Image (cartoon, rainbow, N blue to C red):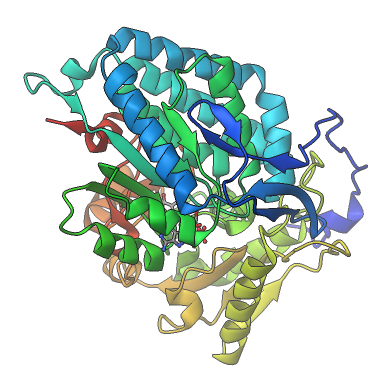
Length: 483
Ligand code: NAD
């Protein structure tokens, strides 16, 4: 391989997304089929992470608003949605999926503006998957008796759902689509830094003619989520977010009889054996950690590389991160967009500092960063010990920790040396080795010779401190039915 620094040798002209899409100045709550001002009259700012400037005002839901949303969901559940023929419910979901496809470009741009992710990801990954989830669960709506043969599945009731900021629209789709397909109604709270696109999704629900109250959206911070999940008026809690908040929610819900699913953090091992197709593995490792700025619960944030190929692999990684383009999320050439918030950038920077302090070696891209907004260069650490914080804690940023192993047994024990169990990757030329290793790794999702591939037909979820319950696929129906 030549020593060419591709990033600097070949400059791309800027290719900004040209479709004009404007955010609203102010977003209200979505309750009982209409947009309503919050009862307390309070709003908070939503910041464009690529500029660091506030670009919209978001309604802050008070407890009275959450009460109203839950009451509306209850009425819609008992009077309309649970009584409706399941094939009719399916039609609404198909209609929503089709409108999402029609508005895909606008949604992708809004998602990149509000969350900081590169347009090529929101356009090619997030929004198509959002539509695919609604299509997929639309298909199940009138086939639940086939999913649970002989067990007469019934809906659970009102679901309280809380989602994080890394995939705002996709997480909303993961939660809302199966809930509605099974006959439940919903009160959903998006993350405080990324509420904008979910409110545009609410407009799509209106446009699809979804009966009032079937989906309600309350915006606010952790206190709003806490009030929602602790409310007596809901029957099911679905949470995606950090393990610390997940633990609190588990305590709140314990003993209440509410159903609970928790999709929490991760510290995935991406294991590369010496017989792997090396260039393909380098690309997979890059995609595994730098995709979406590393704001991915299942990111391959620990690279376990076989000792015999370590130096070669690290040299290739070093060359490859130099070519990644960090910058304007709306530029179609951008690989790594903005870090979602100032707070998240602070957490990432502090963990990078801990890696340096504990003696690991930082390899960082030399790429320039924009002057304003929140940015982090792609980087990785070598000389990492399994006890270092960067090898144990979720960084949730574009930072990879490289560890080594000698034998398959050592690879397995290192991969399982974590409190999490969400995902893993295996790179090898040998199919038998894939099955042998996958069998021993405790993770909900294991990719072989690929990484970060998602599909609505495939269940997703974790073990250990990565949570419990599955979303996606037929398994994703289970939390939303009583059988
Ligand atoms: P977070 O736990 O801080 O917040 C998630 C959501 O919970 C937000 O909407 C927040 O307002 C709300 N919240 C905060 N405190 C709450 C409380 N006490 N009760 C109820 N709701 C509360 O997480 P985050 O920083 O937004 O997201 C990043 C985390 O999410 C990472 O740990 C990541 O691994 C995890 N995540 C997991 C998955 C998965 O499928 N397993 C997917 C995406 C993100």
